[in-house]
Length: 456
Image 1 (cartoon, rainbow, N blue to C red):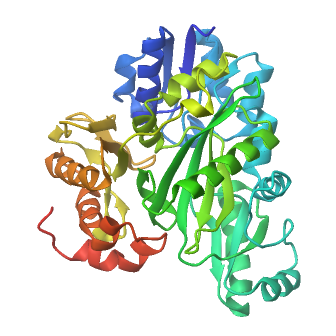
Image 2 (cartoon, rainbow, N blue to C red):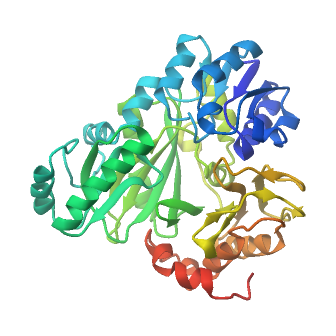
């Protein structure tokens, strides 16, 4: 059993993990960089350790510093949260070698699911539908040209180690293919130190739907339904909801079974998300697996009533899942919006700075996961996410109405936020009718950003 856990993260997810640990009677050790010395999660941890200066490479991404902090604090395990080192197999491997528990999948499984080419091969073995594409890495441009002609344009160029939309390009013809290959490789090499890419058929106007799974070390794997993440800008999610307004019960069952097959084939343990593209005919295709807790995990928590972070920790301690597939009975409709300190009117330019008045929304059906407080200074060094507002109601229309009300209540002074944009999206006819796809926001962004709205 764990008695002390170090949280190798910051912001709202660090606070979320601290709350779960407190309820489990587990002490927490919070690490922080020099620019995070006034971060809210430090006030609630049992111990705090500074691990370096502001740049991530010298603090939250520095494995030796994190391991040293864990050893000094004499912790049993490390929870990586999401982002930073959460999907770094080397970090998980070092934790194992140092006999420190890791709240996540085994390093070899993380390495396999994190390599997009290997993950695709794994999906084939698990009989999970995949998008037509290359059998592996494409190293020769002429080979790529022949493959693109065979599967048909448009094609998607993807970095093997990519994420967050980096190392990805869409090619509609041969010239854009060659240009895209060069750009994707260079971007991936700079971001991930791995310039390998592969090709897939580009699925036009798809939905992005992911399945939450949880697996223990005893062979039990359970899926918890889907989250629709189709409201996104340049592959970055802004709004997530469950259930999807597009998915039928039959399709949900098929996708859930496919996700479980994939996790079992990988030998997966702990929380993970299997992500799919769903086309207009409701055919679904494997996209990738995220080997960590997701930013949008509260959506699943609210519809299932299961604390995913507590379950993560229990599984990491070797316990069996306390539920089986037949126990998972989602209820109601949940929506999450990501509130970022950004200015959409200025190309989503980050808006760091000191927060003045901060009033989170409340009331029936509203949850806020945030590390904000009045006087907090948002640093420029990290992701601009400052709050997640999640609502849970009986029906989708009611959930949208509650979210609109909650965002109108929310006050964040001193910095620009994406709240006005979120209000316009939620009020848009296509969002309300559930007829959006992953290209909706990029295609309508100019009007959503520039047109005044009575809702904001």
